[in-house]
Structure formats: structure tokens, C-alpha cells
Image (cartoon, rainbow, N blue to C red; front, side, top):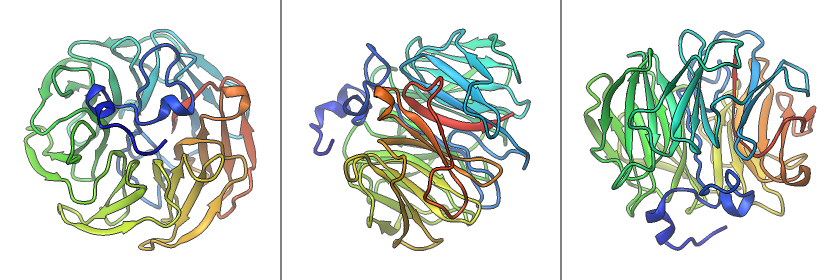
Length: 360
């Protein structure tokens, strides 16, 4: 899972998910977590922003099964299974009207579903090409899609909350792999196409390139913000998490202890950083770090098997999407605050849970 040939990056981003579980059946292996700004006092979501502090349902994008399964709090059987229009889902997001957005790598669409519905509300397809991530920006009510398949180097496309195509962003974009939005509405794009790898930042509405971050990056696979607005970047190839002050392109510190092929990042209610390490030990780990620290505070191994996604529920429980185990289908494991012991395991309806999130 280490030491990739650089030609893999030029062909299109997938990191080593093919080595983990096949990355979407027969289609080319791709993926990449995306996040919106999180606060340690609010529930973490891998692909979306702030939400009310109520008990929310768990949404799981099952890449190999081409479904999104929904679970009520404390349950292990699907409440709903969304399959209409879903094909190799790689990202999830919610808008301010609580509509669900699903980035479908397999059929070049983003499908939208109203709250509680399994039927397609609308389909976004104009300019969408091999979407690796989707994010909703509440500051301008726009949907952004990372299109890794757009020639020649990929693009980020923007749409209104009604699904109308607005524009294509290409300046600084080079095989976009993950997206994030900070509290000011600035868009962050993790680019894995060429060395030096980069994270490019764009102003809201105008979407003009503000700055480019390259220091310390090595195949940036996930983005997250702490409560102070510091940017955290998971670097798969470098086995690090690099940290940047708000508005800066300068590397402020590097976290390497316990980090091994990091796939996802999440901040919990206590402000602890959680890192999903897909290549640590035989089955991977989730490592936790106190605010501002690069020393491992806790290592979770119980129930972990090639972790690819992380999300915190509004009850403060950590949920981990494991793409290994369960006869190759994977699992969701849940952990109470401050604990590394599994409280719940979900396997029913799970098939390569590449993205997980909490929503209505």
C-alpha cells in the first residue's frame, strides 16, 4: 500500500483502495473523503457542515453495492436503502433544506433526495465526470463537485441549490480528490495529480484562486478544520497529518506518530483529532490526539479493519467505516466518547462503506 508508482496519480486518483477492497466493483478504483468545517462542540460529518444537536440518522455510501443505507440511532438494520440513481457512491452531503446529495462515480452524476425519501428529487449531470467528492457551501448555497474525470486535469464544478450549473473551476485544480469549506465559505480542494501535490483555496461566490498550499503535502486524501480554523491534511503517501494556520500556506506542524496511510480525519466533541490509518498493523487503527498535540492519546484497534471513513454522531459516539472484514463487505463500528471498545457493529446492508455521515 506504500510507494506507489507516480503513474498511478496521472491515471486518476484512487490511492490504494483497490488494494483494500476493489473500489466500486468492476469500475476503476477511486475515492477520497471530503469534509466541511467541524467544531469540537458540534457533530463531525465527513462530507457536510453544521447540523442541529439532535439524534441524527447514520448514512452510509456503499461503493461496491451502489447503495446508500440509512440507520436510526442505536440500530443495526437499515431504516432505508437508497438505490435509485446510485452507482459507485463516493461522497455524501446535505444542503440547508436537508436534501441528500450523493456523488456517483459510476454514472457521472450527483443524485439528490429529499429528507426521508428514497426517490430521486433531481439529478445533476451537466459537466459531472467521475465525481470523487461533493460538498455544500452554506455561505453561498452552492454545491461543489470534484470531477476527477474531466480532461485534462480534472475540475471542480459549481451548482446552485436547485441544481443549475453555474461554473467550472480549473485554475490550480489537478485531479481533485477531497473538498472542504471553512467557516468563511472558502473552498479547499486537495489535488493529487502531480508533484508537488497541493491544496488550493478559492473565495466564495467568485471562486477565484486565493492561495496554494504545497508544503508538507504527499497525496492529500482528507481535509478537516479544528475549532480555531486550523487546516489539517491527511497525507497518504507521507504517513503524516500536516497542519496550517488559518489563511496560511506555511506548514505549522506535522503529526506522524501513529499515522500510517491516513484515509480520513474527524474532530470529536472534546476537540480530539481522530485519524483513520488504513495500513497500521494487520488491520489498521484509529489514533486520537489531544488538541494541539502530535502524541497519540489513544489507539483504537477493537473492531477496526481497514478504516476508510469517520463521523461523529450528535451523541458524541465515533463511527468508523471499515472496508475490510465481514467477508469482504466491511462494517461500521461505533465507540462511546473516551472509549476504544466497540459498542455497536453494523454489517447488515454494508458493502465497502467508503463514505459515512450523519443527517436527518
